[in-house]
Image: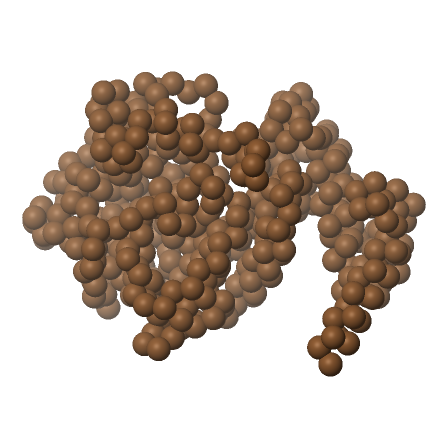
Length: 418
């Protein structure tokens, strides 16, 4: 079945859902009428909380309702259209792991349907993975009110879990959304994103995705779906790639430009200034933060080793863990791990692991009647004495007192409502 393309109403904008002050923060948006098209330099998740409407993604329309989740890539233009008389209430999280989009891009080809870039860009509202994603969004929402290193680390792990769940669901329905049914603009944009760092001409793309079409037809298809012609779209994908490399320490702009597909550094600087209105160094300075004034310290998501370690701790917090096990499973060294946690988070893996376990114990104390001993075992502490000591060190109260305070608060809330 061939899909129809809806042309853009105007040129896309960026900095709406992603940007230096939006990383690791939950954004709430209410859309009452058709929104202008958006094309960011990062990917982002959208959860539909209320309302019905359509997401137009690179010209394709997808119906959305409460419980739907979308993962928009930096190669995609999104227009949000609520139904007539309806409002769409959306929760949005920028997903800024370095090179995440291009880790995906570099692993796929137009014939490989298993990657998220080539999969259904809207999922839900039904499915076990979708239900878990909704729960993670709720937890993310609660943690967004806390400005601390620990909260930042946990939110990073939640986003990683959302990505894994989304990929799992998308893979399960790949048969319903395959490359052959994509419109020309979708095929072309996917191929360009996949091959943007290599020498690429419009004739190369035509030969790869639509041999029966002409270069002018492909250029027109891209233009009406993304607002960019072939050359502009290719340069944007290369710049998005370069921006992701900015998150690595000590990489020169000359090296970044070369691995992002630009033949000359001066060309990279000119394209960057034209596309963003600023130099690469100015952009880098704005993107990074020292964590002061309530801004998110982006350095916490600069290290793939660190993110892998944090995700590992979160996923295995109920099991016995020591540095030997982590370094073995992540193929790194104890010294590198120690330095990463110290320089990026001013903490240690033990402190982060304790924080994960305490937060999990808090949820069990609040929502269940399990004995504290059982909660200690379930949370990975091993004994109630160990949990009590660590719990008090973080919260200033014992687990029993914490449960009592939460129960009283719930009782007061019920009484106030009645």
